[in-house]
Amino acid sequence: MRNPIRLYMSMSLDGYIAGPDDRPGQELGRAGGRLFNWLDDRESDGPSGQVYREALATGALISGRRTFELAGRWQGDHHDGVPILVLTHHADDGDVPPGHARFVTDVEECVRQARAAAGDRAVMVHGAGAAQALLRAGHIDEMEIHLVPVLLGDGRRLFEHLGGEHIELDLVRRLEDRDVTHLRYRVRRAEEVV
Image (cartoon, rainbow, N blue to C red; front, side):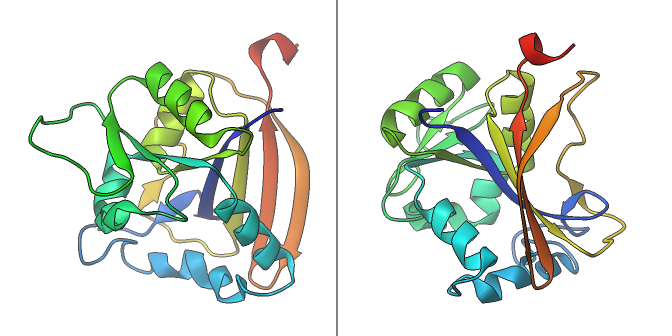
C-alpha cells in the first residue's frame, strides 16, 4: 500500500481514548493520562520506541477538530512540519489555524490533500471524530491501537458513532511492551468481506 491512512490511538481495554470530562485544562479527562504511560518508553529501542518512531515518520496528519483544539492546535506543528489537515464541519473565515494546519470540511478532499502532502509516507489520523468519519467513508487503511490494560469506565469512546456498518479487520502486527500492547490492524474493504 503506497501511503496508508493509519489511525494512531491509545485506548483503554473498555474502548476509551480519554477519561470523563475531557476539556481544556484537562485534555485527557480524569485519569486519561494513564493511557499514555507507554510514551515513557518512546526513546527506547523496544516496541514502544519503534511504534513512536514510525508515527513520527508519517508525512501528513488528519485530525478531528475537537482533538486539534484540545491539543492547543499543536501550535501549528504536530511533528517535523508535516501538514495538519483538520477535518471539521465548519470553518469560520476569520479563524486561521497556526503553522502547518488548515481546516477541511469535506472528507474526500481531506483524504486527497493528506495523501498528496504525505508523498510516499503514511498519513497519521488522530481523534475519534476524524477516525469515525474516515472509517464510515472507507478511508482508513490501518489502525495502530495502543491498547492499555486499564478499564477507565467512562469518558470518550473511540468507536462510538460508527452506525450499523460492519467493519472487518485483520491483525497484521502485535507488539508487547511494558504497560501496552501495540496492535496494528488492516481494514478490510467491502469487496474482501464474505
